[in-house]
Image 1 (cartoon, helix red, strand yellow):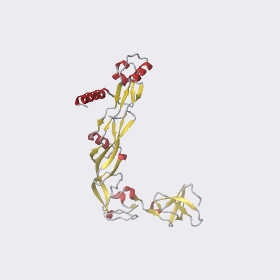
Image 2 (cartoon, one colour):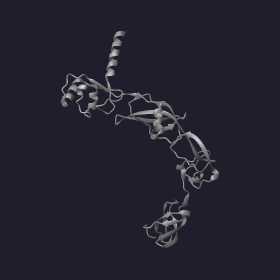
Image 3 (tube, rainbow, N blue to C red):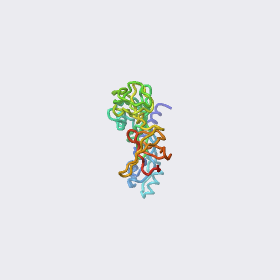
Image 4 (cartoon, one colour):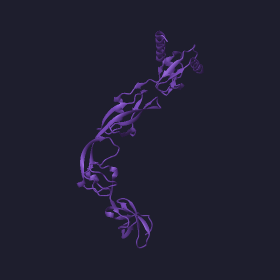
Amino acid sequence: MTGKVFSVLFLISLACAAECMPVTGDRILGRDLALVEPALAGLPSTFVVGFAPSPGEKRTLATAELSRIARTNGIHADELPEVCFELPLRRLESTEVAAAMLRGLPAGVHLEVVELSKVDVPPGDVEFPVAGLEPADAAGNRMWRGLVRYANTRKQPVWARVKVLEEYVAVVAVKDLAAGAALDADGLRIEKRTGPLTREQVAKRIEDVQGQVLKRPVKAGAAIPVSLLTLPLAVKRGETVRVEVASGWARLHFEAVAESDAREGDLIALRNPVSGKMFRAKVGANGRVRVVLGGSAL
């Protein structure tokens, strides 16, 4: 192919591409046809011609199809030229991506967009839900998967590689802490830290931690996750506890045997050592229990 012929074909292809009209909805409507072909201005504006093309593709309506649409809608027109529609595309900007990410992040975080997906997207709303943020790699980079909502009902996936750091206050273990041991102020300190954003909430005040126990061990220097904290046992299985039964102004007190471990606020199964019958009660402060009215007879 000679250079001259190639140039002519290239110019023709550009001219064809230029003829394609942008469409932003998920359907090509009568008003879209009217904009490109005045002879079809009589079409109802909301008349559905067909589906809009997918991103990067074109939808061409041939002369025969346009003539049929015109006849169906009572429009008399001479031979109509074919028309082409496409979704306008653009490249994502790091500024709009960062703005979408920050909408779902806590205040005060430091966000750096390291890399963006190299894909053109239609105009639309950019969203990066926090659920799409993956764990950090060895370099501290995190994949964040998002989407662009466009054409009313469609969406296109996008991604970015980011660094997300936050400044926070944490209760930190001064020494190795064993599971099940009650926490006290001597083994804890408060620190201001900067690190990768995490979904795990850490304790921020020693008074919120003191007296509670850990569900598993924590190494010295580690922050105390709230999810590891639990109240100490108020009653242990096999212990004898004092029970109060209340009915109006009347009070009855006696002793019973715990059939399970329980913490303050828990319901616990108890056994009356005299009658051998089982009943349920709620554990109060200092290991005292109160019978749940309506439970089994004593």
